[in-house]
Length: 141
Image 1 (spheres, one colour):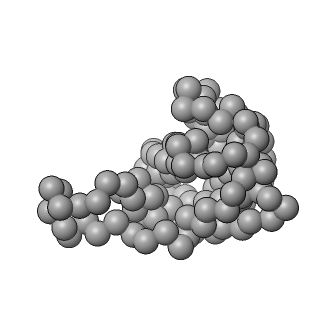
Image 2: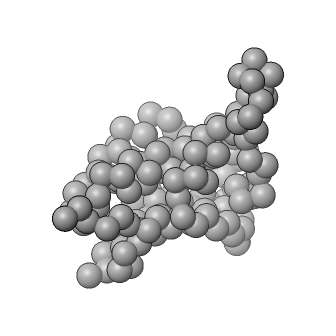
């Protein structure tokens, strides 16, 4: 069964608590496994936080829609009237460099790339649209 929900959240770090509840309700209603659930929550938190921290201008809300298509969850975060920031072209963090020599930033996006199966970016009509696709784990037998 395909399911779809969408909600707008204030573009503020304080909205994360409401986002956790929104996403967890969807996860529970769709019987999503724990490993996939963790990856979905982390990815949404990271992308939303980056939009809040690094975006210039834009509207004061970000839309998060969640849909299930067979064995995948599709997450679309839309930042309205925003400057483009293509997360797919951002360089990956070099985790081989010792901590004291690493540049600040990039680790969250690095984790998202390794926990989410597909990341797509589109900039359309001044909207920055990030699509994340997570293939669900096989249920434990």
